[in-house]
Image 1 (tube, rainbow, N blue to C red):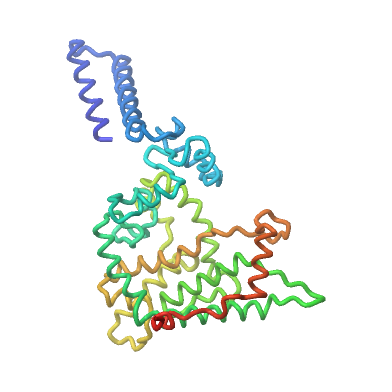
Image 2: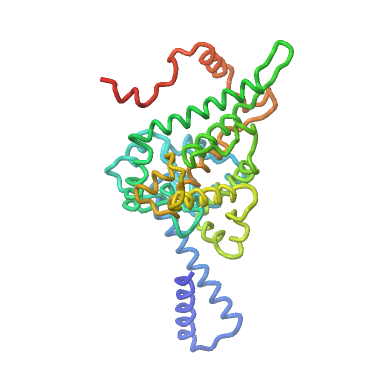
Length: 366
């Protein structure tokens, strides 16, 4: 905006000099309009030119609002796939966004030798503008340093602790099914597997992160309206992905007042408070709870407390995203196809791989 103002100022000054500095009000308005028009044309040309070698719709090359529109329609995946069929495996879907659909490009972008950085849209995963989680860090070197501090918490002697936590939630899931969803010849008790799988994933994530689950499986439902609020927030994050600069606006006053916070009694703010209190508890010298969890692992490896809070929030939020749409209607199109249901049923009744293979067994293999 500063460049635009300077351009208009210089243009008006030059025009004034050319006309002997005798301006009429209408001439001023016309001059400003011409200057703004010229700036806009130049801006759109530069926006289009940057990735003009990548095929795609012209309108998408000059504005991200097309992608935003399809986010609002909730058909962005279908839309980008149709563009790939029309323009090829590499297609420009927004001025600074390219979608690819071939494994060769994936290998090239994700290779160790590639020097690509994360796009601006990763900013939307920041819950605090003063601190980053690893997934939100766009600087490659800073992210490598953070990863060297995070990885040890997931490996080595601590794997057995992690496995025991996962096993306990597997047992809790089986117990839930046996308590409420075992059908009899006279009574059919259907179970929405999509939601129960989400409950299981959230309890696993919170168990390994905080040392105890939040209790979704035990309640067989939402806990303190956490899922209700996060599912309501998810479409907004899709829009932020196409207009990432909005993340700075929503973290500024007055929009910041409407954002989740640790003072909230329910919803996402409860997770933020839970994570903050958990980290503070591990830092308390009088804390007698010594059982291992990810927070302790992060802090032992040099992750700053505020950064550890961001890592924990991100780790628990990801399973909250409703990737598995479900419906109570047994004829819903969200149901998997019959062939897939048959394979799933066959695997349940005829397990061929035996019981789960613990990690400590893999360590003694020849």
